[in-house]
Length: 383
Ligand code: NAD
Ligand code: MG
Image (cartoon, rainbow, N blue to C red; front, side):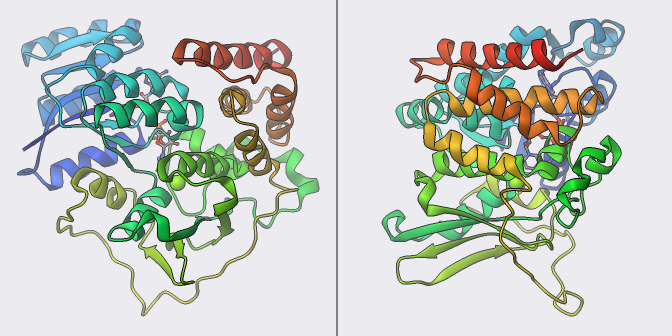
C-alpha cells in the first residue's frame, strides 16, 4: 500500500485524486489531507479515508469542527505552518500537490527533501521555482511526476524513448471559451462567461487562466523544466476537442500522441502508479461517435498572455516568478470584478516591465520577487 498525502484535497484535483484512491482501495492509503478553508468537505473526506492528520490553513474556520476530528483520533494542524509541517512528514510515499498558486512551492521543496514521489498538479510551483525544484529533486532522488494532462501525455509518449531522440514537444490547448470571440469584444467578458470552460471542470483560477491562454503559457514553462527542453523545442497547437492531450515528435519525424476523454482522473492515476497502469472503469473514447479532430495555430495577439509567458521564459531569472505572481493577483481582481478580462495581460505585462526580474539565489530571494510583484499589482490596480 502506497501512503499518500494530498495537499489541497478539497479542490478539483484533490477530490478527483480521492476518487482514484477510492477506486483502487488495495493500492493506496491516505495519510494526510489539507485544505485552505473548506473544513466541512475535509471532514467528510476524513470520515471516509481516515487520515492520521489534516491541516487547515485558515485557522478561524476549524474551531467548530475540532471535536469531530478528535473523536476520530485525527490530529489537526493549522495555519501555513501546519501545511508545511504536513508536507515534511516522512511516512509518505507519494505527495500529491493539488494546491493552487505559488503557495505550493515551499511544501513541494519540503516533500522533495524526503525523497518521496511528488505527483504535481500545482504548475505554479515549476513556473516560479522550476530551477530550484528540479535541482533539489535531482539531489534527493525525488521523482516529480506531472498530473497536468498535457505533461502526463508527454511523459506517456516518452516512455521507452531516448531523451536525446526527442526533437520537440507539442502541447495541445482547447483554446478556451473565447477562441472564436472577436478581440474587440474581450473588454465586455463577464466572470461567469470566463468561468464557463467548454471541456474541463476545474478550479476558478485555472479556468480563468484557460480563458486567457495564460494556462498554456504556464504549461510551456512547466514543460521546459520537467523535460529539460528549450522554448525553441516546445510548441503549442489549438485543438478544440481536447482529445489529443499532447504530442512528441522524434528526430526521425515520427510523432506519438496520447488520446483520451478529458477526465483528470486518468492522468492523476498515472502519476500515482507510473510507470505501471492499473485497470479503471471510466468512460472511454468512442470512435463511433467521435467525428473530427481539428487543429489551428494559437493567436498570440488575441491571447497576449501566451506570448508573455514565452518572453518571461526567455528572459529567465525571476521573470517567470513575476509573471506568475502578477497573473495570480490579476485573476483574483478579475474574479472580484475589480478589473476587466482584457486587463489581465496588460497588468502582467506592466509588472514584467516595472518589477525587478533579476536572477535569484535561493528560495528566499525568489519569494521576495513574488511578494514585490503582488504588491506592485495590488497597490496599482486594487481599489
Ligand atoms: P482548486 O481551486 O479547485 O483547489 C485548490 C486547493 O488548494 C483547495 O483544496 C484549496 O483549499 C487549496 N488552497 C487554495 N489556496 C490555498 C492557500 N493559500 N493555502 C493552502 N491551500 C490553499 O484548484 P484546482 O483546479 O484543483 O487546481 C489545483 C492545481 O492543479 C492548480 O495549480 C492547477 O493549475 C492545476 N491543474 C488543475 C487541473 C484541473 O482539472 N482542475 C488540471 C491541470 C492542472
Ligand atoms: Mg493542463
